[in-house]
Image (cartoon, rainbow, N blue to C red; front, side):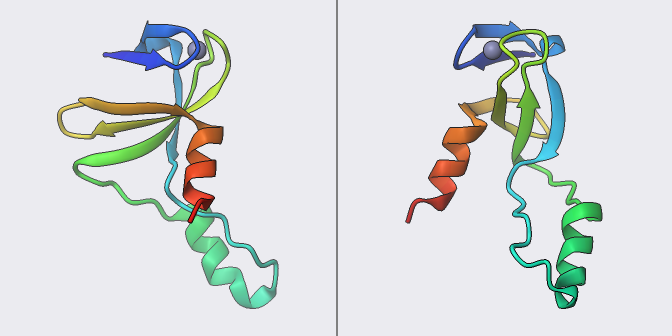
Amino acid sequence: MLIKCPHCGTRPVEEFTFNGDASIRRPTSNDPKSMDQWFDYVYLRENPKGRFDEYAHHSSGCRAWLVVTRDTQTHEIFNVVTARDYAKKRVAP
Ligand SMILES: [Zn+2]
């Protein structure tokens, strides 16, 4: 599988370290009443079939954090953006 890093170009998947679902959001409150939200955030993960946004660290390249959107069945890659751009896009109205 090849991944097109926005900084380095097309690189083999072995250069990347994956770190799970990029779509989950960290709870904003530290209030003890939000412990259920924190439990879900820390321990519970979906195992989706199909399109999936996943953090990838280009650990053997530019060391940038990226978000790779791929199909979990076919491994087709739809999009690769920096984690910063992904976060900005989520915040935008
Ligand atoms: Zn790179």
